[in-house]
Amino acid sequence: MFDSPRFYPRHRIFEWDSKFAVRNIKAYTAEDKPLPRENDEAIIQTFLEARVPILHPTQYNYIKLQRFLEKANAHDLTAAPGSSQHGEKIALVDDRCDQSGGPNSTFSTRNWDAYVCYPPGGNTIWSKLLDSREFYARLGEKRQGIGAERRTIYIANLTPLCALAIAATASIHQAPILRDFLHRHISHRESRFSMEFHLPYHALRKHTSPASDPRLLRRSGLFIPISQSSDRTEYFHEAQISFIVTGIDEWYWTAYCCADTYFGSEETAQFYLNEELDAPSGAGKSTTNPVWNPREYFLLVLSRRMNQIRKEWDNLITSLDDRLGYHEESIFNEQALAGPFVDDSGFSRTKEYTWTVQVLQLFHDSLERLIQSWDNFQNGESGYFNVKGNDTLQRTWEMYLASTEKDVRELRTLQTSLKQRIEMFDRMRNGVSILLYLSTIVEDNARGALDMLSLKDTRRHQSIYIRYQIEG
Image (cartoon, rainbow, N blue to C red; front, top):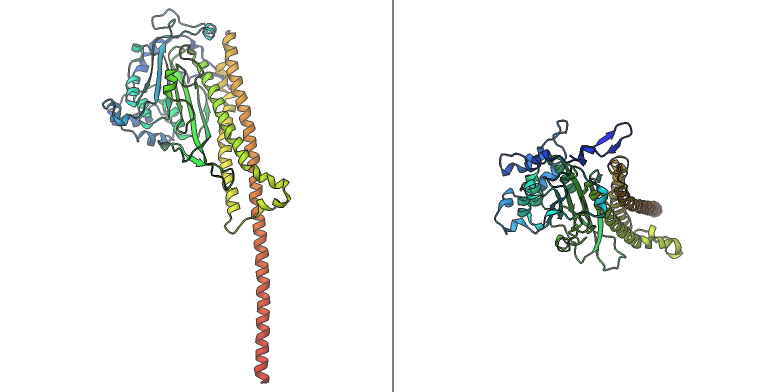
């Protein structure tokens, strides 16, 4: 499996195991055998408990995935075609095998340099957009019998029933890998790299009403308005792109890509299919000239998707600068100098600054997790992509890595901008609080002084009245 790397313990440098470069046909049969289970009601339990290490805590963090899968009914996977339960066609599956590397081929290794310049189209090509029932049926077919050695799967807005189809057909070797992959995609809390990545982000869109996620998996929030009087409504949306490549060797592998597109982030799966474009990479390649090397395909998809997310972050933070710039105008406007630090009896200014800081902190933390995961990848799993004796292939891969690194550098700059904004609004919020506190003390002192004067006047009038009564 691709999750079994070699590495040098002393330096923690990962190295691609050379055994993956040689065909291992005997191991293919096991991939056509799904997890054994008693009945369809046991799909979820069997999937979640498959090969769990004995040292893992009993309440290991699969509860979100479990709840997500339980929203689906296993009987819908085998219901009659056209049932409403199957939902839209959201799973785009592309199956094919290499003409020069089929099961009966004498080739046991490949010359990857030649594949960079002239990749074959492949044979036994099968590419279709499927609903959940059709997806389940295709995954259940014997891959060796249909020539589906190289398989890519693109799913827009993963549904519980679609995820259940993956769980129900996963082999005993793939189940733990796919279980972790699905869990990380559902949770939207973890950024991760290996031969797998999860890229969470927030996207800004203009809507007359919130474009809510019909799965109730991601959240949307009202964006900071341009001004108090503006009627322009914008929302920021939680989203994530998850991708994994897993397989037996460099011939027999599967790529899964799950992308959140409910708010209008990219073309439809039908568009990719009609135009013969690779969907996981967002049209980074034509399907007529596919990428056959699993590591190269990972780098292609990673570079394309990181660039997409960098642009989404850039769009959001540039818009933030535009919204929040009016607070800086007080620095250059003497008449408005006290404006940002004056609050009313309803504490509206304090509430505005507090809410703004919370939004900025949410964006900052999401970016920080993403950047930290990339740094960890650079210090470890990036060693998978060192090629020996394939100069053309190495140059191509270095190009993908350089492109990704450039986008991450720009993300660091955006993160710094967010941090500066957070500090500015913290100071402004503290300034309002201090002035409000001081003004309260002044008011209390003034009220106390008036009370003392009132008490003195009362006592003086009482003294005059008593003296008048005595003398009278």
